Each structure stands twice: as structure tokens, then as C-alpha cells.
Image (cartoon, rainbow over all chains, first blue to last red; front, side, top):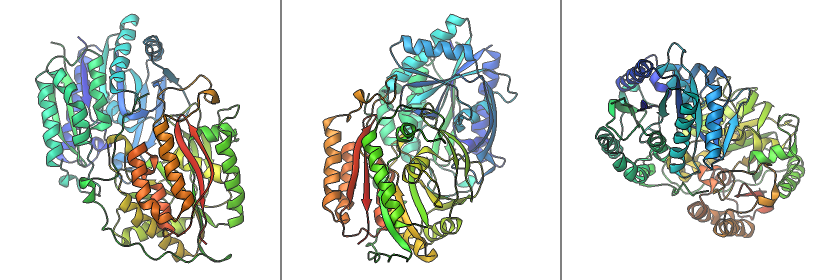
Length: 269
Length: 324
């Protein structure tokens, strides 16, 4: 069984003066990092919905993603300025791209100086791997492909890892409901609106119960009713890894600037 | 290829964050030859393929061309733009997506390399341009006075997006006219709802700022039209043998909108734009076109379509409106 997790994407988790929910979500993400290391994971197969694409499936093939990101939304805050340094498992990245092609999809190998690493990947890497000792393989989230394609992409990643003898973990970086509060707020004012909160909890209840079919079955409705982040392609991706047909442990749930966010862990049973 | 978005132009939920809808202000009188004001507005689509096809020195990838009809339309736009002798180009672009409020780039000299994460093989553009800071700050101020959530970006280091650069480069590859760039306050990727009424307010605030500062301004709405497209691309991106509309419905939707554009007056577009968004998932959902026409006061004129063509199946038109 492959360890897997869903973690939030918003940079508020790195705030110096966070809301309670931001701090709890950050702590949950750090716990996931501890568990991935304890599970002996060699490389994390990473999907961040903030690395969204529309043509094919981009696989990051740069060996080191190092730099400073000034976020185009949150530049006025401390968490809008993000140092990052991710070591990529390039061998696995190329094998993953090959496996995507072999599955009849279009892989796009991405290696460009100055490529803007997305905020979600930066936030996740900072919290899951604070010492910067882990290795990553990242694929984009194609918003124009059918969501089921993300499932096939994850499966291709798992096959590629197995072929190389890697022990993978699978992490999807995504929010739940995305109804962002459209004004500047103090952290203490952060809330998820009731209807979106109800949907988030419904989805998380099904995840806790290990009912993947129920989650997949409600995904489209969730997307429409609660503006689910990228139509909740994150769960389709996790499903493709084979990791979510067992109960998920919800380590944290709460608002991030009005959006819903959760940390969920699927460990080895 | 799949249709993944179905977003209506606004919803009950979004109504709560809109500025109250008001009757439009009277259309401003057309500026004289040497007076300030908005002297022209252009629908200026930004597909990075068009910049790639032009092979400018600022862009690293090399092409063999492609999408010529749209690029010829931009050639004509450039010729006309120079005749307007603007002090400033003001662009609203859908790929500087801001989640909270309408942001205006107030950095005096944005510069850097914009590697587009979706099209990095086509667009790695070295930019270095001047902002009309006085006008940028005035738009922030007027927007806030009109009740909008606004923010002035004054931090160096934020990468300028390809929709801003693309429209500006294609309209003025010499980059010899100062710029003001505005963000799109929405997120088309999360079933988020556009707030076209709010774009009316932003347009009016933009106009007020232009008049206050006495600038001769040309406005650029950096939007494509119908927006369903392929989710893969050919080995040679500029292989025009595979370039065509996504389907007839999308093409017909674009033609219906352009019919209204060509017939005028622009006030008819107040209904036609939301209908077009509903029919074709148009990128005008991001609000750029509504902003432009609102800033011009919905003038009682027709637009002139300089070119139409598809890019990876999306519809794109280069259109000019000149106040009479």
C-alpha cells in the first residue's frame, strides 16, 4: 500500500501570525511529512492544482527548483514571499513521462530556467519537508482533460516508481471548496460559508469512511455546489494511485481565507 | 478534449460582492486630437502562440510562423495605434488572476523573464517596460472610491503574466509607450463566477483616473472569445493543418457576437457578452471586454473587426473601437 495525503495549497499556512485554522492545517501538514519519512518514502509523486495546465500533462524534469516566489495575490503579506528549494527525482520524472505517453496520453517534459514553481508546491514542500531532504516528482493538473485522466496519470507514476524500485508517496496539494472571501480580512475573521462547509464535511465524512466510490460519485456535484478546487481533480489523482480505497484520517480541517482546506492521511493498513 | 467548465456569468452568490448596479455614466465626449481621454479601445487577444509565431528577440523559443491572419490583424492594429499617439496603454488581462480585489501594477519598471507555466515551450519572454505610475495609482484610488476592493502592486519580483505581455507586445512591440496593467479579479478555474457588473465599476474608475491625469489612453482588453480548446497539441505547435474551431457551435457563437460588434452600438453588447459567455465559455468572462467598453462609456458606435482566427481551437478577434 502506498502512503498518500491531501494537503492545502494556500500560503497562509506559512504566516507568521496565522489564524488558528491556518496553524492547525500547517501542523497537520508537518505530521504528514513526518509520516512519509517514517514510511520510508523515497520520492513523493506530487500534484498541485496551482500548477494547472491545459495541454497535455507536464512533468517537471528540472533537477532543482530553487528560488524565491513573490505571489501575485499575497505579495503584501509575509507569506507572499516564498523561498523554495526542491530536489527533483529526475530519473523518476522521465520514467513517469514515458509511462504517461505509454498510456496513450501526452506527456510534456518541462525543464526551463526561470520556470515559476507554483505556490502550492512551495507551501507543501516547506511544510512536508522542512529540512529539504526529500525528493519530488511533480506533474501538472490539466484542467481541460477529463478529471479521470488525472487518475491515469497517477497510476502511471506509481508504475514508473515501481519499475525503478522506488518507494513512492503520493501527495495532492489542493483545497476543498474555493469560495474565497473577496475582501481583505483579519485572520480571526476567517470562515467557510455554511453551504460550502456542509459540502466539505460531507466529502470528508466519505473519505473517513473509506468510501472512494461515494467521493468520486459526488465529485461533480461538489465542484458545482462548492466551487471545489479544480473540480476536485486532486481526489481523482489520489484514487489513481490506489491509496484511497481505505479510510482516510482527517488531521485538520478549516478555513483559509474563506476556502475550505483539509489535511488527510491515508497510511499503510 | 473535453468541456470542463460550465460557468454562468455571475450568480446569486456573487451578487453580494458586487458594487450596486447603477445607470452608466454619460458617454464621455471624444477627445480632440491633442486632448486627454480614451482615444481608442481594442480587443487584443493574447495567445502566446502569436508572440511565438512572430519570433521577437525578447522571446526565447523560435517558430516557423503560423496564425498569420490574426497577426496581420495586429499589424493593422499597430498602424492605427500609432496614429492615435497615446500617452499610455492600459491593459486588463485574465491571467494575472487575483483572488481578492482588483490589482494595478504600480511598479515603475517591471522587468524579468516570464516563463509561462502552461506554455513554457512557446513563451519565455524577457520583459522590461515602464509603468505610468501616476495613472496606475489614480486607478487604484478611483477604484477604491467607487467601492471596489483594490490593491496597488508596489513589490518588485512578481512575474508579469503572458496575457499582459502578449497583448502589449502584439499591440506595441517597440514598448515605447508607458503601460498600466490591471489584474482580473476572478478565477476561471474553480467554477468561480465572473462579476461583469463589477467590471463596469472598474471601467468607470479607469476612465475617471484617465481624465483626472489628463492622459491620452488606448485601452487593451486582453481576451480571447470562445474558449474551449484541445488538451493536446501537435508536434509542431504551428502546424496550421490542425488549427480549426473547436466545433461549429463555438464558431457560430463567436460570429454572433462579432455580428453585434460590427453592427453596433456597443450598448447591445451588454446583453450579448453574457450570452456569448454562456454559449461558448468565452474568456470575456474574465471581464476585460466589459471593462474596456464601460471605460469608454458604452459608446454608440460599431466596432471594426480587424481579424478573426482560432488558436488551439479558441476563437480570437482583433477589434477596434474609436469614439466618434
